[in-house]
Length: 184
Image 1: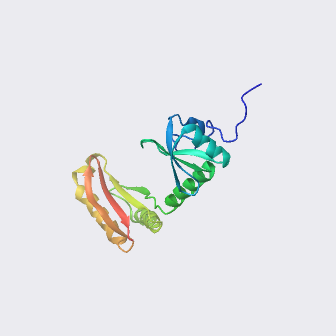
Image 2: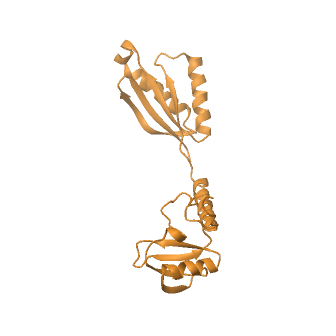
Image 3: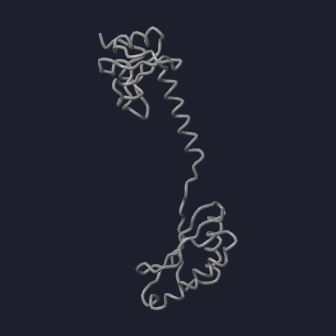
């Protein structure tokens, strides 16, 4: 025979916040009821509140569970959830995500290779991405870290119209790292 179908069922998906209780899921004996227009109807038993919501063909939604008694509102829960999702989408839309790109150099880089990698750095900065520039030292190259620092400062000077140095060159093990941030 199966379970009977209830159009406003307490077991349906409740969206991103599953802690919101609606209709039959509200188990407290009495609630403070707010109607669909926002008017307070006072403290009612849960059965009276559920009957009121059912007569209006709307959902009884628990909006403040910590209250004494809990506050419940009569509303169309699907529409409410949709509006919450729209607000969250708009908030995400106006956020800017910071992406960090990394480019690796060697201290004894050839001039043409340097220009190619500098072109990549310029492209990243034009797309408003931060760039982590790493110089990898091998073997005895680590004896002269000033060569790596000079190379990083030369790169920073070459892209100064697009970026500022966010963190100065510093030695981290066998790598020297510098962060470049795009200008606003």
